[in-house]
Image 1: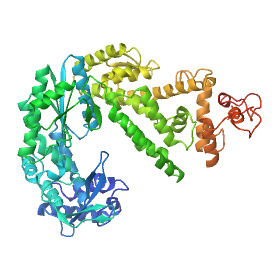
Image 2: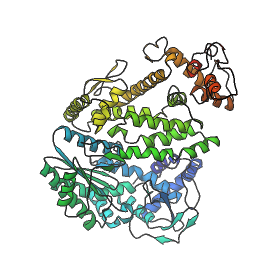
Image 3: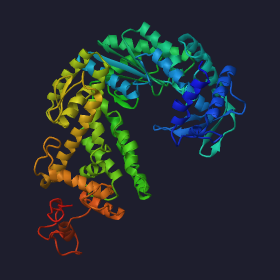
Image 4: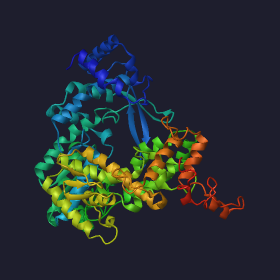
Length: 619
């Protein structure tokens, strides 16, 4: 084990100072970031105290209470999260480096949840494999298993035995188990239960909880590959995905046998329980999924045409499944009233929507893409959230004004950039053999070329989503790894890093958005902008930057002085079409009898004239 000096460095670099500022606190009400104020002498004493706890294998008697907070889940119910005492959390953060070292040493391509092994990568690989099987005239079958209350039912003796076998630190594991055996109280709001002591299970909220679950399930994954060599496994926390492709009978037998082995190992050997409600079989056809359920002896699977895998749609590779993606949009719209209420309280709702709203409604677009109509609906919802209340605003202009030259609150960025970015990462990191990526790409191009109307009807996975997305923003391809941007710049996926492709794609989306604004306001089409914003006029770009500076009071604004909040809101509302022009006002009411533009008095005051009026052009 490391000495006090090394522990102090962990405390300074990776311990108490990296917790979020608003993180929850335990019963002692001491924020973890308070350690930043301790002197080196106190940190040395704390390091020695931690080493004494590790040698004894238990915590001090005064550190003996964990608060269990029940947080609401998106699909109903509540999720228990443990708030450990601050000293336990600090020690866990300093020793988390051992868990990361173990994960790196025992890396397994089927275990996700670590560095560069997120849930989106697992969902992308499953969707790609399903689509590739369909292109290669092979049948695809999969089963999705969910463990009921996995953390609460984990047998600690099995975890200890697996840790000894796979070389995990027993000293650290023993003190972690001591933290799990502390008294705990379950709370909802301001009400808490009596003190109880858990006899099994690991506590969600522990920094090493996911690593301990991986240690426990590692042997099951290895044994499954030994018994069923034709399947592929994906494990993310407590969600198992088993897939196979080939001829009809081969895919059915492989998935059913592997599913039976995994279910029996989880329930008979580890004492866990597989969910009968959430475990499903999904294949390229419903008949194939039903065959899997009949062949499976454990009877845990139910056949489905489509399902969700880690929040992403999964339709088996031959059908387009976007229901989970579409269902998020009405959920977001229900929160618009609350967003507007926060806006009236002077909360920065733009930042709120950028951090939570846009990622929520565009999650998993890298696997299935986002069709044009769905994208327009999502952009309208986001524009309603970031703009002041009222009707008649043009969502294109609203998002352009809010984003400015570098913002990305517009869902169009995620919808158009992520499919390219994930394909670039897959090629760069070889998530799949490059010959497989190449063949699937070529098959996707041929499939999308057959579309008579909208190509999105034929999008069933990452490859076809990539082709449809590229054509929407004006990109082309010379080969599966040579992409050409809308400005003619070429990218080699084997030489150019994925981040550079994502950056260029963002600029393409901005140019695409200005071209769309030009269709709404043809009078803005003037002299070309050269190579940076082709298709948009200099007047349109100058207007955008001028309005952005004036509306939001940028200190470097030399065109207009910073306006008050009232004037900024009124000007923004007029620019995006939220207020009637003079001609419409005269037509609809008797309050005015002049339909001419009031600044110039030279032409009718229409919406088109508003953006080309010679009296306000200098502004």
